[in-house]
Every structure is written in C-alpha cells, then in structure tokens.
Length: 67
Image (cartoon, rainbow, N blue to C red; front, side):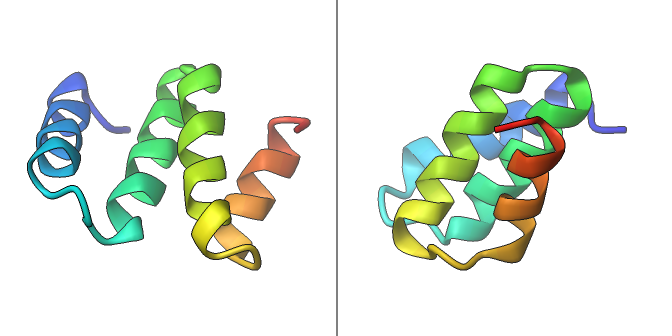
C-alpha cells in the first residue's frame, strides 16, 4: 500500500516537471485509489486518458471505480 509520503513525492515530481511523464499521473492515481481518494484518482486517470485515450490501466481502474 502506498503511503502519504508516496503521494508527496509524486506531487513534487508533477509540480516540478510540467511536462512530466504520464506515468507519474498514473502512479499517483493508483496511489490515490488505494488510499481511498477516489475523486483525486479519477482526476489523475482522466489526465492520462486525455493524452493516451487507450491507456488500459487508467481505463481499467476507472471501470473498477464505477466511472
């Protein structure tokens, strides 16, 4: 399970690198989902899908969340 420290590292990475690899958003979405932060997870998954509409991890996790 991720910790809030994990989220902090991913948040810092995303803030410091405006063009950060979408993997950071995907990983942050997964961390949020596992911590029960579903609104934040959905937002990160949608960010990934805006650039990669066929990203299977983001699509699958949104489906699991009922989105």
